[in-house]
Length: 270
Image 1 (cartoon, rainbow, N blue to C red):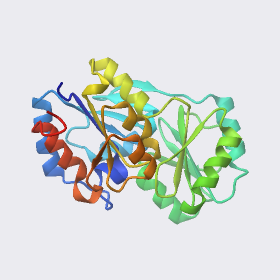
Image 2 (image 1 turned 60 degrees about the horizontal axis):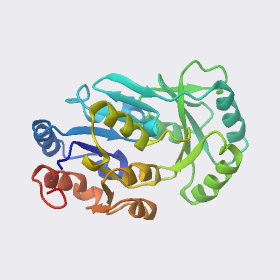
Image 3 (image 1 turned 90 degrees about the horizontal axis):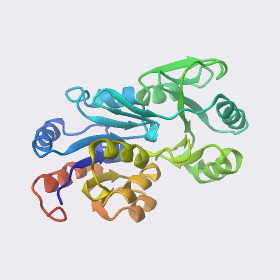
Image 4 (image 1 turned 90 degrees about the vertical axis):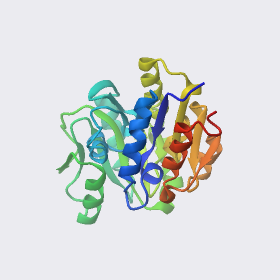
């Protein structure tokens, strides 16, 4: 059976540690993918507006599972977006304000929102990941469709914070690690695998025809769902356990190395 869909996480997977990729090599591969009828999907916890900036040449052709599955777009057309109710939004915000050592990003469809009172270094980091960003004095009375929350915190606090979040708001949101001192709060069941499933239904593609790449806790479902789930050489232990295969390191163009195997129908893609 031939491969019909390749889905890539971005940070720590498709991108190297300098947040770059070999554009010329990939765009040549992309033309081959199109010729072979293979769909390319970007599946990331990051904001849609940030993700399209990495693919200016083809953003209007490919699909995006952005915000950890919270917003799915295909060739510029909305396929799905989650929506946190106003009551649940307020419940989560009230709880997050009780926690020390975190910075909150409320992730909406139009913009991400974070607080003016956070220090400039934090706001500069947030701006790299959220190209549509609004600084606000509070999270009250925001007019947007909210997809998830992003939380910045020290790496060492992530395990304990995940536990606290599960106990505090686990009835309405799931805490997933995204790597590098950050946690996403997503609506239960709204994850990357769900976004891919919606696209697969749209295109008539079976899980056995899908290749996924990931490195972190927010990739587990899509690594398990696809027949060809690849954890990067730099992946977390949980991602390695979820995947059936390993790809070379993200700093060694590991995803592009495996895509070559797909295009050339080399093992395991006979």
